[in-house]
Image (cartoon, rainbow, N blue to C red; front, side, top):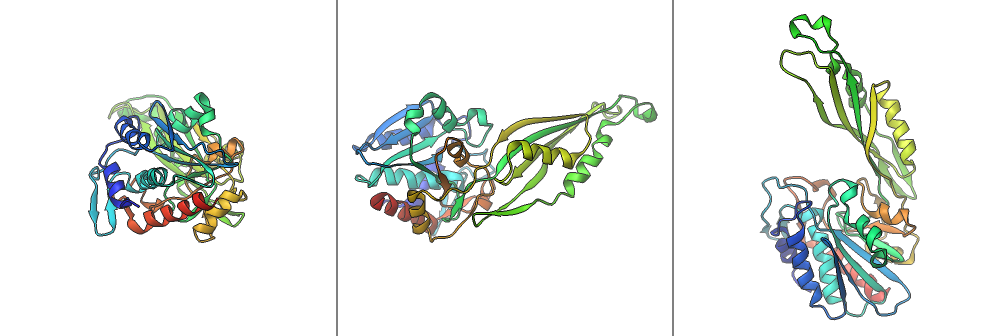
Length: 349
């Protein structure tokens, strides 16, 4: 086995902020096309490598190649058995593990599909997995799927849904010297902000997996000039909801929290996925990972597979609490643990 820490560092040093994954896809394509037991197909900046050994079962392993923008961490730095750098955790460590498996497991007991895809960190309409389902569904057919998202080398089943909502209040402009002649739209947002600030997310356990909901204000806009009473103000909310809620139920819940507003618009929605560890391949992953699963608090592309009836789970290196932070890092221990567990599943079926 190659040094997974160094392989991950090499990927970190290839910039791949969302919508700019060409260079890293080129790199992975060159690596995988040299592997004789793989057939490799590229669709845009999405790369699919597959074995075709006639096995009765196919497992799909996927990782996204894009990152959020840099935060002073664009260069890889190895200190002992720890790698620091943009994407080290989310999720170039997982990509490195999958690429190494693709290059080293020549005779898996199950046919295997490796997917390296673009634009996971941005709006759903750009998502590479969704593009493959739309344009080349044959490439992503599988009996079960695994996303190598950061989970601290533990299985995190299912995922929470995510919804973005824009709430708007209107007012009437006036000169601030005679503010009583107008109506301040920003002031009218105060009850909404207070309700969200006081929000306590529901916690629920499903099939032994714990989920915790959340609602946050992530953006505020408003104002015309420094001497004008504003006539329009908006807040953007992000709601993370447990997989026992449908999107419609989640929307109704947020409406109840914010109360009466002038405009309520859902601008982005991705449904949740229930834990689905019943498939023998995912049971094998769970066993190889220590036998204990928790719920995935973030949203992942597990939901895209679940929506199409394909059982899927999350299992990858890196602490998810460090994702998108300036202190992103991954440890050699996590990389080696995930590689070893997945290799045993591929070899034993």
